[in-house]
Image (cartoon, rainbow, N blue to C red; front, side):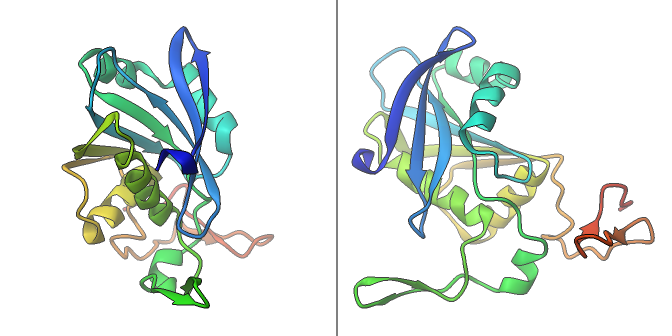
Length: 199
């Protein structure tokens, strides 16, 4: 629903990008940058995600400045493309939180837990599919690193995508891999440090 998005047109690295904030399931807004090819559409859409989330619109702008080669090739071939952002990853949130249960109380949404970053991605997919310029039956997702793990989580429970690519997914949580001795607990945060984990 276009009225639920805040859109600004901006040139980034010589290309027209629609910078927008898209509402997630719990009413928070997340940053998205959308490129539309020449023509009338509706266009197939490929969404790109990378990393642990957070950083908002500055991350989107930097991605279009520094990580746009593949998106540019897709747009030249007639695809709409977007870099998407989402809330920051929660350590073991997928394993420990259980499935998200959505209900209503006094006319408003009620959840059993806060949505996770991959659920923000599903929300973004649904919102972008509602745009008249997008062919809602031809939407795909490319996720790299943690974005790849989120892609695996998404396709395990959401069936609104035609194609999904998990590129070098950091999929230890999704696959329920037990950390080896290279993993340690950060003394300051009490969170796992998996940067050198061997699989």
